[in-house]
Amino acid sequence: MSAGEARDIAHTRLDKYCRGTCGTLAWSNTQKLKKRWLVDFESLRQKFTVIVEDDGNSSVTAWDKGLTKP
Image (cartoon, rainbow, N blue to C red; front, top):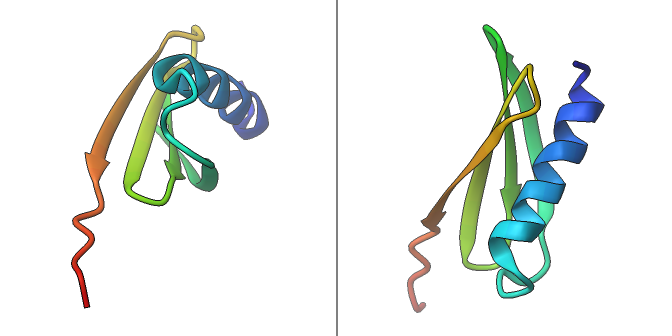
């Protein structure tokens, strides 16, 4: 699997995860670790990492950015 394929799978998986509630998503990084890809995205208030296995399975991890008021 190429980085582009992993990014496409991750974006599709994240769209399903968010169901339109995450806001605008921006891809930020893709890296390969052993037999899986870690694909990072950001929205205004959250960061997401999608783990994409070589067989196409994927899972999403999300966390708040911890925005503070000035």
